[in-house]
Image (cartoon, rainbow, N blue to C red):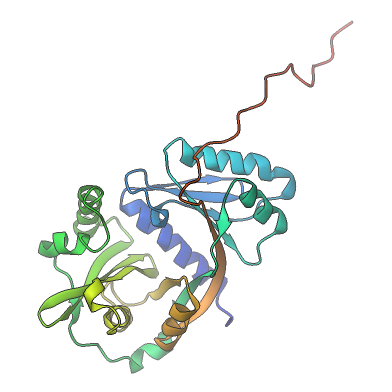
Amino acid sequence: MEAVDSLEVEAALESERQFVLTLGGFALEIAGATLVTHEKLPVPRFNFVQELGVGRERQSAFFERALDHYFQRALRPTFRVPLPVAAHVDAGLRRFGFQPKSAPTVLMLDVPDRRSKIALPEGVRPAELAEIDRVASFWTAERERPEFRAALETAWSHPNPHEQLQPVLAERDGEVVAAAIVYRYRSAAGIHAVATRPAARGHGAASDVVQYARAASPVGPGVRYSIFSDSARLESRLTSLGFVPARSFREYELPADAELALSAPAAPSGPRWRPPRAP
């Protein structure tokens, strides 16, 4: 893994959290982690725990507090833990039923010096606000689509200071076949939710969308782009497009049949410490 400025890595991770926040989510910081949450979009992409470092002696309280936050909302979070994973963190997550994904999740950063060599792919363009229904259809089912559409429209047409959101579309034979959302927060921009219609997969449309985002800078100049990989094949493809691995994580998730519940608390007992009494 190439040496990358840690400040740029943190800026990319902060931009990702801000992407969830601008779409209506929120982030709660507790000792050892940030809990990224979106109650109305109950998918792991918007509900994850970014572990920052949990000590062995404090892990039980940490896990119970983090899980209670999500379970009260009937949400299934993933835990994103930087590699190498501490043994006690791995054991604690497994004890609560979480299983590690087989491949690491890798934050990839683009190399700005290589952008001048990128040719703009044909058939890829920024989406227009009037196409918002088409854009939203790439990522949501019917139940979540109204909420996602409303949040997307707000962030797209009424951005907060220091941010900009721009969906990108790829067309083939007059049909929109792939899409992505490019979101900038300050000096870092993430390429999110790259998706291709099933019938158009395997023909490079997703790669064209990513390549266009880097080459055309649809959210303005002077930013460094990032994207996440969740497989060795995707990491290799992104490397060929001019990205380098910057930080790796192990993601833990709950099986589909896992029950969202914590163990019953122990019976209440008297105080273990009492102040001294005056004679």
